[in-house]
Each structure stands twice: as structure tokens, then as C-alpha cells.
Figure 1: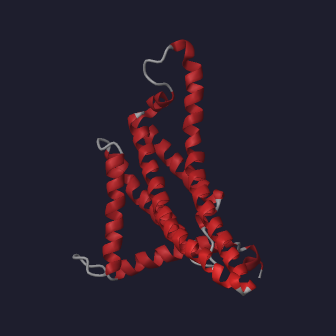
Figure 2: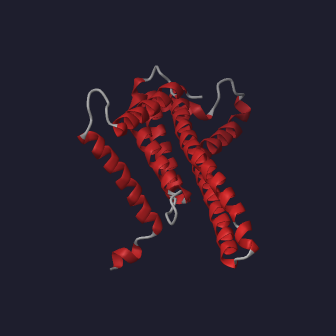
Figure 3: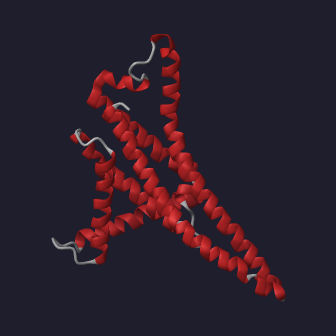
Length: 233
């Protein structure tokens, strides 16, 4: 009984998202062919190719070690996309509207990028905090600014995704509550209530686009941060 008491919406729907992804991958592994035939296999292989293309286009191609990020980036892409879309279902919960979740993903990505950057450049990786040609007398200030800016990437990644998902879904809930009150009032308010419904439909379509766009932006930024760590830019 205590397990169900401690199971919050965040924990529950995080498990649901992982379960959805696991079932899809399991189904594809059972019914996959050399020549894709099932729609699920075509979509999955397209998604893998899409993410692999993002990593290849937005990272330093000369460092083959960066290809180890393809599975990780694919998992992040799948988790965020499924979480965003699952949050559009009525009475569900958007996992990515939790700052704790987005911060955890951003922090894990940040740590992984630094590990790979340190493996490529060893101690030379610290040069990322001091641009070449910088005058020595202002070096301490530049190092401080670059360090703060570099560490702020975790916050920018996490807050961008969290804020967009939270704002869009909050707007939908407000409009839905407004429309429900109008329908409940009866009379002329019943007719006026269809206006919020039309707005909700339009905003829902927009939110689906935003859900994919935010997933794409998050993934591309991770790839760009990988490139920065590899090329010390």
C-alpha cells in the first residue's frame, strides 16, 4: 500500500513512457525484417537514421569516438518525444514539464560530453575556458565568464524544455476549464462555449508541433555541445 502512496504522477508516467518505448522496441525486434515491411519498423529505422544524421551533421566528423553518442541521443530523443506526446492525452501528465526530469537529462548529457572531451584532449580540454589569443591580464575574468557560461548550458537546456511544455499544457488546461464552465452554464453560454473548443483544437495542433520541435532542439543542442567539446570551440 505504501508503494502506491509514494507513486506520484511523475513517477507513474515516467514508468509509462519507458514502458511504451520498451514495448515498441520489443515489437520491432520480434517482427523486424531485412527489408522493412511493418510500419513500426519503418518508423523506428527512420527515427534511428534521423538521429544518426543529427549526430553526424552536428558533431566533429574527424573524431570517430563521437559515434558512441548515437544510441544515447536516440534514447534521449525517444524519451522526450514520447513524453511530450503522451502529455497531450487528457488526464495524463507531461513528464518533461517537471524541471527535475529535464535537469537530470541535461546534467547527464553535460557530464557525458565532458568525459568524452577530456578523453580526446586530456588536460588540453581546459583550453575551452580560455579562447586562443586572449591577453594574459584579462585571462582570469575570461576564464570565470567562460566557466559560468559553460556550466549554464545545463540550466538553459533544462529550463527551455520545461518552460515550453509547462506553458503550453497550462494554456490548454485553462481553456478547457473555461469551455467546461460555459457548457455547464447553458443558454447562450452553450453556444459561446464552442469558441474555446475551436481555440483548444488549434492550440492542440500547435502543441504537437511544439512537442516535436522542442525534442529536435534539445537533441541538436546536445550534438552541438558534443562538437564544442571535441573541437574546443
